[in-house]
Image (tube, rainbow, N blue to C red; front, side):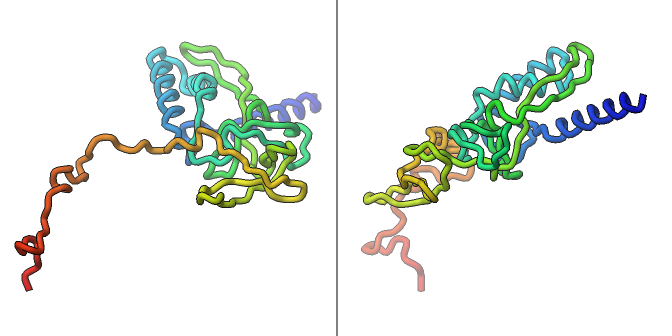
Length: 220
């Protein structure tokens, strides 16, 4: 009987730890990806209309929008990396799905899987779902594009003044590490129409100073 109680206690502890490691894709600070947010918001609204429990909606929408997830401002998103910690379960080449900048943690595709328990509620069934939990960014390194080995990143400038990232460290080739296309996207798109605080173009182009006629000259 005592052994059974110990086993149940250990199982409950694992569940609690797994639940605390889970980070909501909406509540995580630093996640400025408008594409992911809009996808998640639409999915969440559909869930609420169907009367689905909020926890069930969270898992469903994360699974649906996770593939479309694009996080700007993140230097590792979409890059292939290798574990630098030596931990067996994190070994091998990995692809970063999301970076939680406020916690300095990363979510890796298909790695660090944990179980999330969802209670049964009106309109949905409960169950155990597998999700990817974040772990510290110090456990990964970018791969050298030439040698394929983990390396550090340095910054250099080309002859035309272009700023590029290069591999550095022991055994590094010093080659340029290309930036993912998603990093070239702006987090906040440039406005295409004038806002309430913008000066109209006709006022900007209006000539308010003419030294010959004295227009616009200060009165001394």
